[in-house]
Image (cartoon, rainbow, N blue to C red; front, side, top):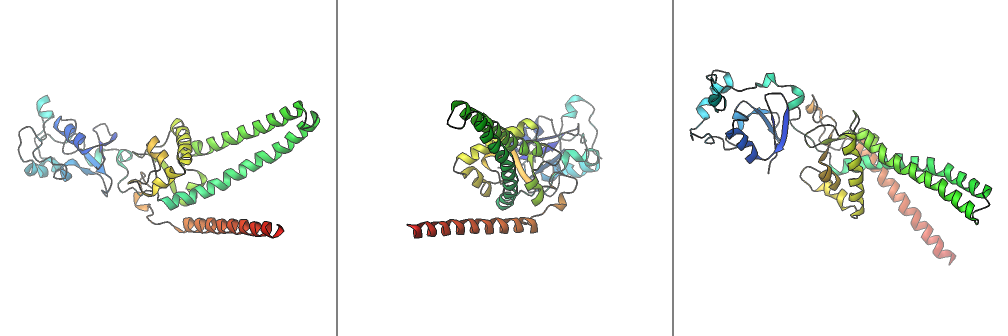
Length: 307
């Protein structure tokens, strides 16, 4: 079922809500035929009157009168201005907000291009290389330091030496964990709304209504990301099959991965296809995987020959 968004008279965007909830707000007088609305699949925001037939608002008024004859007057501003509180809630009242009066930031969006599964894989590959490099940068010096501390403390066979090595490596793994946590959390909640990998392929992470993630939600998404991993990576594969290309951690945290120009002043700049950068990255990742498999095969053959 379609999810709808609407902009109120205070120039604030609300949603997503179901069509039934939108009709209820119309019946209650909370929105009128001049209210701007949008759902996924629409090229741009439109007044409620333009899609009244789709939402079955023709006879939604308490009088049951067909409203279609009043659409032109309402949109042109020729409808009679309401004079009382009762009239203010009437569907015949002049719209409280006109399209030109609404803050563009409240209604930006239109067509939203979701980041497909393979774009996300390409971004993940770049981020994996970055975080793996960071891991070795931290781990190698601390491993050497741990060996030195263990030797100074009496060698790894002694209790003091073992404790020294354990504490040194423990600090290293703690730094690595914090780095793996803060890198995506800080980048996703920044003005870029994307890690370096996502920036490279031209995608970003947003709330389902297009807003930027807070740091708290970005941290929560990291832990939900772990949940997608421990489900035999089924949580990741879900992004290839769900309606809005959401992985398990996206569904849990109410996030979307979209084109970098989605929910901006230039949604027409969004890219539908994979793009050259994504294709190059996927090709390099595939080549690297084939080389790794070939290396394991050669090592297996060599080990069999030695036996």
